[in-house]
Image (cartoon, rainbow, N blue to C red; front, top):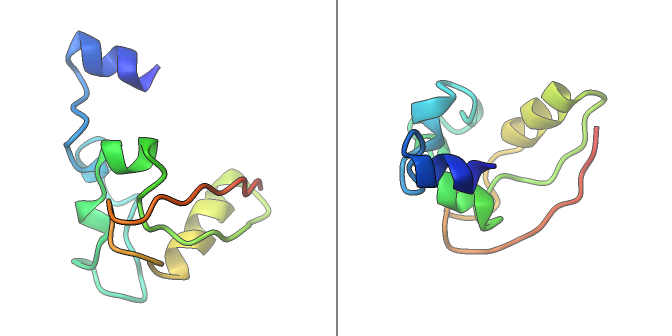
Length: 86
């Protein structure tokens, strides 16, 4: 679906996720400018966002817990797949 949106124009692969979901990818323990704002749509699709693999009790909890753990690599440098589920 994301690639269809890219093809149709409203989403750009190299745009920061922050463009479409403001504030969702902030690493609270590392400062507002650390990695989160630099994660692109492409990084997410390539499993190379650098977001840690943590599990929460809900989908939002999984995102929050993962971001609170900090980054595990610089976005776009290390592909890593996680099958974490809430």
